[in-house]
Image (cartoon, rainbow, N blue to C red):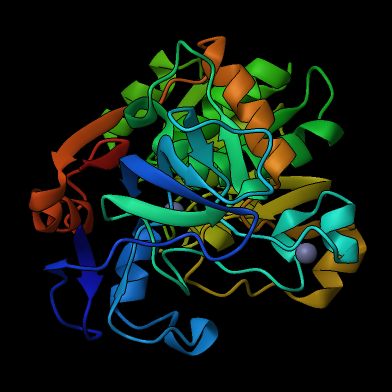
Length: 351
Ligand SMILES: [Zn+2]
Ligand SMILES: [Zn+2]
């Protein structure tokens, strides 16, 4: 089968002829890939940032945001039929450890992560486990939802966590309105009455966010150091929009380019800072943390149930993924466009 493989770090991916995956365990499921999301994490994988964490043997097939059709299943799989339209939770989990038993799939003690530490979905077929497969509503197509498997799931996980503490009248700042952020806006508007303030460097992304229901958008100029109250025009605007107090929650989908100092300053006392993007360090004096009781909360992907709930919102058309579709053979262009910041919302590979 065709597969886009990582042969060496810091080297272009290669389209190769790879062996098709085979059923070896009773709960294995092989999926014919209908669409695979192209993610910023793929760029980090190519740069070798995950090499030590994943210990993956090269060459291997990347791609961790996958949807398609069930192609084959092991003898113990009773809940799926060949041809079922499905989206895949990104991890393959054991189902037996304490984390799995509490529904916390991401912290499974014996998981694998196709596309990160085993063969992923930039290919015609992918092997996963029955626990990771969610049947799609008949109105949804793989190409329309594939990137919800990670980007959307991560945004959903962070937004639902934040929404549990947000009351009507509260405000949430979302930093970034790209692949994750544009989903986050829709999720937050669907499940919460909080006021959504989106901060982004790109006016086009802000127009998209506004169209998706953001209550306020703020253009992030390189504002730190500007002559203004807080020293930052974005923080000043957030403070103005929140009656001088700051927001109850900040969801940082970026965590690069100075978004964290800005986000921390946008928070009110006892506020919650949800870290989703990764890159820069958060540097906050501990005395500021205790004196204001602000909280910093990490977010890693999301659970199977998170993804199942997100598929409900997708079927209700409350969350619609905005995509740019590339043929699998054009994978390099998709990677280059994402790297150059030319992809509005989310790039998808269609085999
Ligand atoms: Zn991803
Ligand atoms: Zn487990």
